[in-house]
Image (cartoon, rainbow, N blue to C red; front, side, top):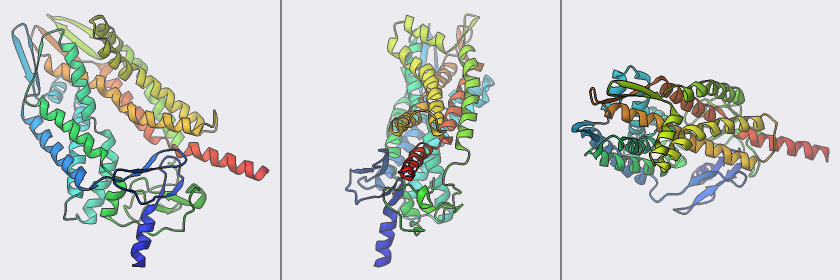
Length: 423
């Protein structure tokens, strides 16, 4: 009985992944959540039926994904000519145009990664528990890959492409379109209900604490660190987590160096990505290329102001602001700038959420290049700018992941320690 209570108490101790503050979670009623007292980040959420709920949503999403791929997705009719495509024909069109990298990115982010994550949720929530040799790699892959799934962003790209295509012909929503909408909703809900602590507690119990932690003190000051994969608390000098066997460190090694290196590379690609054409339109034998800003201006002149603003914000404003924000965060974490860590934390969370939505323009090009194939009448092809812009989005996402937000709060701890010693 005492061992069981000790295990329950051990499970309640967490280190905030954003600011490293030590917290002992209270008993949470279903429908409530615990937040960090220092940075306000969500530490845990108590869901009704925390294992069955994501399992049902994941199963429903996978069924809808299969149906969406079995039937035609959308169609277009221009001057008596009709063309319809399925989801699998979109990457095939990019392969035919010798843009295999974009086709691979589409398959990975839109289909393979979401399907893999949903299948992992199903396997991990089965009544029959999986052996550790299988469950641990599945859980590690699930929690790392789920942020790279972009099915809902592709859906936004499809809706934006409808506005562009309405100027040329009539758009038809085929049988595969509606299951895809349901797939996006069920997938988002499955990921939303995914509680990391509950899943890992089912796979393997929390390892014993190295020492008795102190509430309100950073883990680094107590020689403790949190496993980046399963959130178990281990000694700071312990290289591998005893529960999930993930290698880890008290702070991400060379976080600022990696962040700035990836950021500078993305800046170097961002300039030509906005200058070079991202799409080529061939109408009646006359080919013309257009870059991102040209597409925004075209939609604005056509009267599609809301869509023009969405493209401008997602493809021009968001990448620019994300680059500036990551640079600002690195400047502050390096010991410069203001000490408003709460503001910096909000900036970091916004960067994590909105950065991936810049891919919407790449998905618009994918839909247009696959659907608008009308022989000698009209054809749309991707161009080099789309490849560069895709790389910019991916590099900035890696840059944000390489940044360790705990470095911002380490500065606060250092300043407080200096102030206490002076007194």
